[in-house]
Length: 64
Image (tube, rainbow, N blue to C red):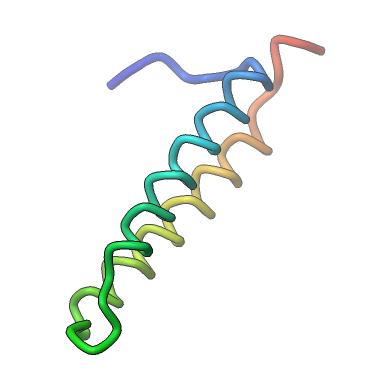
């Protein structure tokens, strides 16, 4: 496992990258061909983003 990100700028950058990946996946989905597994993957990605945001919020910042 990698080192925890405690710098707020790095945390924001990380979240932007993850959100960008999510948007790319969302853009590639064709509604008429979308299956339940695809939607489950999107939900899992949103849950992961939410979990990471909560982790970042609970970590002490090295900027403080």
